Image (cartoon, rainbow, N blue to C red; front, top):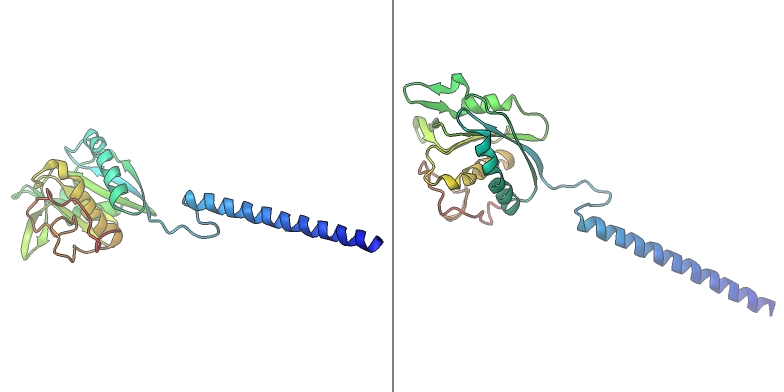
Length: 218
C-alpha cells in the first residue's frame, strides 16, 4: 500500500512538471509570435533599412511647398520601398554661390552635393529641392541641364523640377535619385518604360513611370 501511494505521488509530480513546461513553452511561443508580428526579431539585429532624410529647400523653394510634398513622399516611399524613412524639413537656404554659372543661369549640381555632404551625420541623407535649373557634365556635354543628381557613396542628392514636364510627378525623380544615393543602385536594366529607375535621358517626362520593376525593387 505504501509503495502504491509513493507511485501515485511521483506520477502527480511528473504531471505537474510537464504542465509547467508546456505552459512556459506556450507562453514563450506567444511572446515570440507577438514580437514577430510587431516587427521585432528576438535576440537578433533588425536588418530593415532605416534613414533620417533631411529635405533641404533651396532659394525660392519654400518650406510650405515641402510640407505639401511630404505626404506624397511618405506614401510613395512606404509603398514602393522596404524600410523605415523619417523625413525632416530643413530651413530654406540659398544655393551655393560657387555653383552658379552666370551665362547659363544654372547651378552645378556636383558643387551643391559637395556642400550637402558637409551636413551629414550618422545614418542620414540630404535631398536638395529646388526650382532652379541645375546641370552637370554628362552625355559628352558640359553643363548639361538635368533634373536630378546624386553621389552614390555619400547619401546626398539634389532634384530640380525646372525641367519636369508634370510638376505633380516631382516625387518620382526624388525617389529615383534616393535609390541611386541610398542603395548605390544604377539605372533600370530592363526594357520597362514604367519603371521609375529608367534613365530619363534629359527628357524630363516621368508621366508613365509609376512603378519599380522586379529588378529595381528595394
